[in-house]
Length: 339
Ligand code: NAD
Image (cartoon, rainbow, N blue to C red; front, top):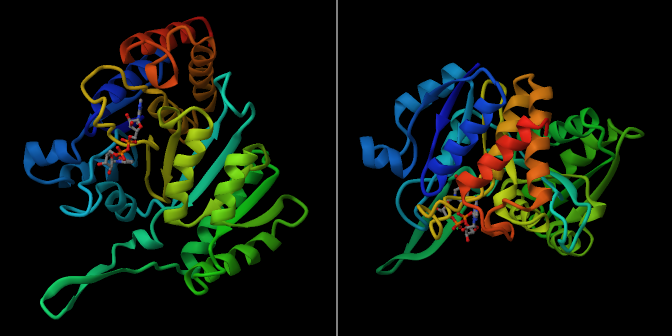
């Protein structure tokens, strides 16, 4: 299969190298098309999202992507958001599952499905000038469409049915944002009726959901929510299972899919060789699954989980002393032993 590979910024190149090595060791037949995006692309060609990268994804329809740096509060718009909108990658699937022992929770297994193209991330923002102050006020618009809400909720319910899940929680803030969140909830309730008898359905207001996730995460199964809430809650669910180094994310559309880690460029540890590549490795498993290589994905995942459980050669973020390279060698060795 042909896959666009975007190493990205910060720890991106080191975790993508580790992931490519692991996939090669798994025997996956992948032709990589290496492309640039983010600050790496700005330095090389003066454009954070070069046409060649977009053309490559259009051709391969599959990409494995390292994190991309986005300047906060100024500069260009997030390339991640732009890629999701360009390819209409409406579903962001972010699983968080306990593998490590010794954590506060022993059996978290949550799949968070985040709407990925609408809501507050639609990019309609402006300042309002009052008197001499050009930035006296600012507004950002949250746009929820019936079409967008319906397709993400339906995606989450279909995902739940096809993955043997039992329950879907609709997470919203319709008590305050009666229009945008109210529409999401109304559409969610309507779609839910079609799955009556097959799946349990519950509703949570996002703030109460955050509290309950921290107190009793075991009672959640599949969560579906709007863009901003999904962004925030998926970092929270990462924390429940050992941190951002462990959780992958698939951005799925009808004509393309991009697989990445939930985490960012980790500037505080970039260049030190200590980043945990697990999240991107698990994203690569999502890619294999998506491409119909479920058995290979399961073997690779098993090797990752065995290495994490043994805890002899894990990275510092999960309590070890191994470098990215040493951990990757250990996962490849576990794969060689059959997982
Ligand atoms: P971050 O996720 O990069 O880092 C948060 C903390 O988690 C840091 O302490 C970091 O060291 C740690 N961490 C993250 N990934 C790790 C890993 N694999 N191994 C070990 N430790 C890890 O979040 P941030 O600092 O808020 O963001 C940095 C940059 O990343 C920003 O420019 C932001 O826009 C960007 N970002 C990109 C993506 C993406 O490309 N999908 C996602 C989130 C943030």
